[in-house]
Image 1 (cartoon, one colour):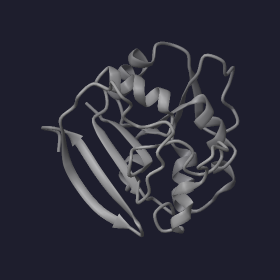
Image 2 (cartoon, rainbow, N blue to C red):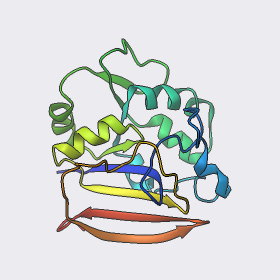
Image 3 (cartoon, helix red, strand yellow):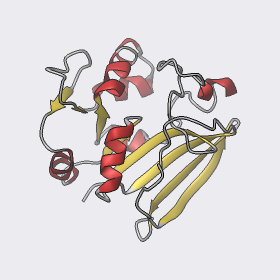
Image 4 (tube, rainbow, N blue to C red):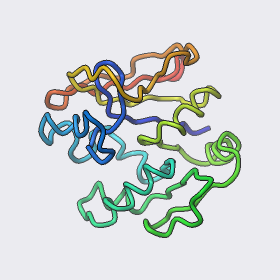
Length: 189
């Protein structure tokens, strides 16, 4: 069985909202205040998954990424552009704005279950998708880039009322001012 891997830029207080500034929130662009090192290249160490996995995104995240990634041609971007992309959306008719993208119309949990048997699934951003997967205990691994700031407000990765989960630290390392933490379900490390 493959894994569901959630990757997120988060503040020290767990806010994942608008790290790049595209959402126009009052704290917009906070991840880029620390220079390129924490965000450039493959900050989450995904190279092994990009060749064989699929990217799962919510509609808003997919639309934002579809406006950015197709125009990039560095090695990491080439892998992102080539991998299959699954878009969970009730309103999107088609996903032809970014190669290898397909809209998922069914139940998220069922769709992930079908695909998880075949390949790793990486979820980036996409708070509603992540929360639905967490609610059904489907997340196997969290790769978090934690930035040294407290935002105090915004969408948090783990909201109040989230189900408890036991995780094991698989790795930790610095990338500039940020820290990359990788947690797996206890027993999966």
